[in-house]
Length: 255
Ligand SMILES: [Zn+2]
Image (tube, helix red, strand yellow):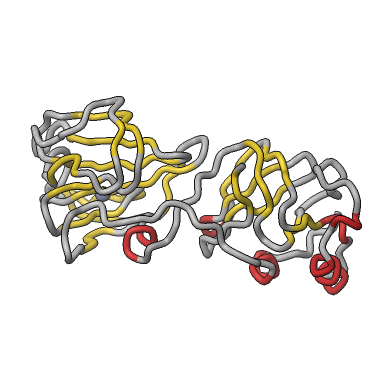
């Protein structure tokens, strides 16, 4: 089985990025400061050293908390206190959820089932739950199993979130390498349907053209897994393809 196409060579094949929702600060403020980033961390809470995996980012600055995209409220905890119950909101968007933690007790303005608009004020920043001080913990969970991703680029660098779920996709890169097997069971049946660019690339990589899918090919994603560096891979009938890379580039668009 050939497996000679690297993530880097896939990057070279990108023709276009697909635009999705626009992202915005989850807090109404001109100056947003991140006090704790996403990922493994060690900190001191009540004099004790704690190590954990931080599934979101901690933000300070401002008071009003905003929904970062249109969605439907799936969870609220409206009453809490510092060191005790944490007040929170979760919002379901197209293919992902956002979470807003440590909200001020009694400040939550939405109910479960409510439709919210991007930019709508949903609560106030607070210090409920296990916190060292007042802040917002903002989290993005994506995919069928709601895996957290690093929200930093979406909040601070206007990146676009892509919903990743199983189902039918269309290849949006110029050509997509299949990591195992030949693409005989895709909706693309014949090698001649693969673009010239993909064929040339395949030849230069000593791969066969039928291990590539050209842009526009429709493909069923049956299963998802997380790859290295925040990439997401989808299993097709013929093998695995990268749906989303570590550079947050989208290779396939959900249809
Ligand atoms: Zn946090």
